[in-house]
Length: 74
Image (cartoon, rainbow, N blue to C red; front, side, top):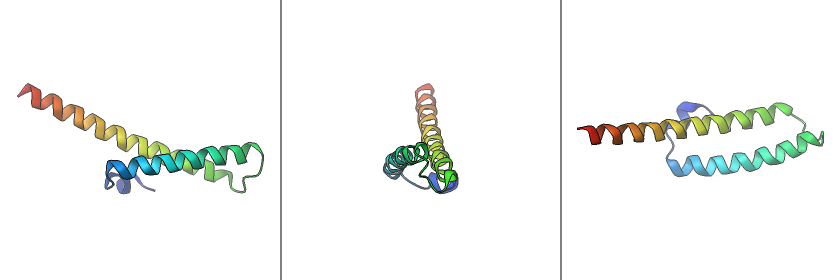
């Protein structure tokens, strides 16, 4: 998943995907701790995808705050 793809999504899609990835991360973390995870890089990939989603979400929040601030100033 790339950040450019995520930027095309709406807020609902991002939230749904975040929830899914967090659940998957929990399950993978448990498997990793029990030495049952076949591909340890999968845990890293999920973690990075969550970070990308959170980053895009935060960018949107900052843009909204900035536009509100500029609207009040004019």
